[in-house]
Image 1 (cartoon, rainbow, N blue to C red):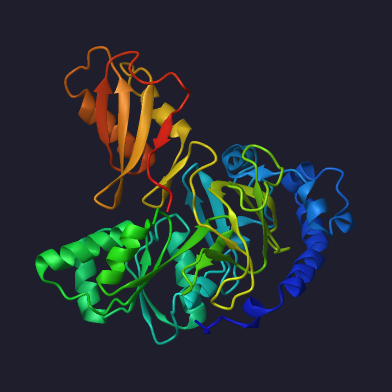
Image 2: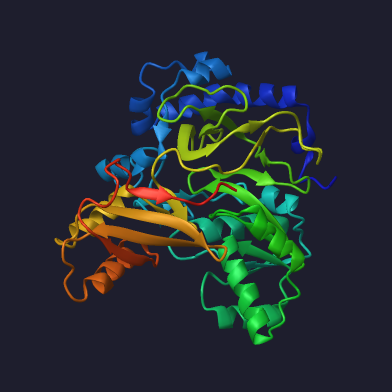
Length: 410
């Protein structure tokens, strides 16, 4: 419990607060030098933003706003400096949202989360996040490289090949969504494959209920979750104390009443808003769309930063399924490709400890093959598989809900 990444994690809370607030004006000034932020922060004097109260008076930028912003000024919407060629990698998240990776050694601040999970340079990390277009795999790849441990760039899927890799290289750490780790373990048990080298896991991108964490523990794997976004990197991470997620360094986190810029009362559930104190890639009051609540007091692990309860749902109707965001506009796009479909609702659930989804659609008289065609469209639009269920016209509730996430919060 005493193994920390550096001394910043155990400094006095007051000292951390003074440091964070002292860095705010330079970050605000750097942001105002960029076209989109200049509009967002019109009339703001950077030197006047030196307190949390002053920060709270600034407008909120929502993740859901990014596709439209970037669409008006491709690729980055005037939110980050420089040209695409100035960055190490150029990626795209669902939305689409275009994500540049800077040339720093750990630009997504993942190394702290890995350290808290017990990862060190002696480890070999099996990275099953996708290396294709999206940032997830590269985030963890950079964090692991910072710690000096070897990385297997496995990506998701292809279970048999993954089992071959595990038996050959004997990785000690899994990185990826928790659902895929369960698939690997189940398939290894069924096929008599040896995956006993895996002793720890750093999971993110999907719900991680206590029941699944307990199952991994019973199978000999100590799994730790972290909360991250492609824009902010790792925001908070689990530690051996197992009491909430500790906030990362170099960021300011606020908990806001959903749909507003107002802070909620201590301990109340609200939307996470993050200010990243990086003048080279500033992010001011970025509302992620996720819900959480602050926990009182410091963590028993010795880290002195504040803690959040973890992911408690979505402030909007977007849902993260197997590490990919599914959005209401995608459901509308699916319905728009099939004239027979009326009102649609995407239901997200857990099935055998794995994320699953089913598209319910009102149809008067479905034509032959329509279900298969809609399922193919669902996969094409969301990049995820799901079932399709037709119901009669007027069957779905008329409550405006397009995505119904029925999973219990972790």
